[in-house]
Image (tube, helix red, strand yellow):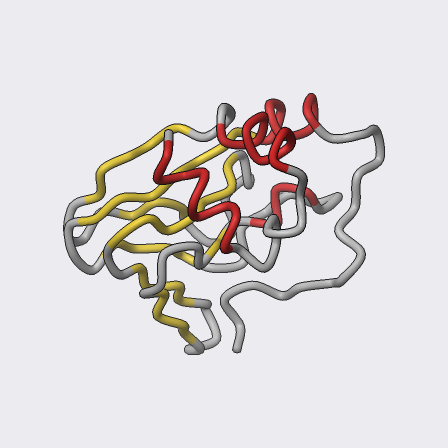
Length: 127
């Protein structure tokens, strides 16, 4: 649990939360080991989880040929799970063994106030 707390504290998305909120948020995340070539999410699939990178390298590839490689603990993917259409916009593939932390949409929504929307529109994996 300490690893995810540190990642959340250092994350631009969650870093300004109170210590109590960090603790509550950390309790939602499940630690998941990744293997090289493992597909975490497929573009176009229903977005059911949000991912925070703990360790390793993740390729976020979009159908139009764009891609982003995530390498830093705290890099995130899958925020589409908060959008109205809830579809992943990228295929996320582990390039090496590593760790991601995942939270399911319904668990995240239960913790957050009704109608939660992030104030900044973010288009993940499209830089």
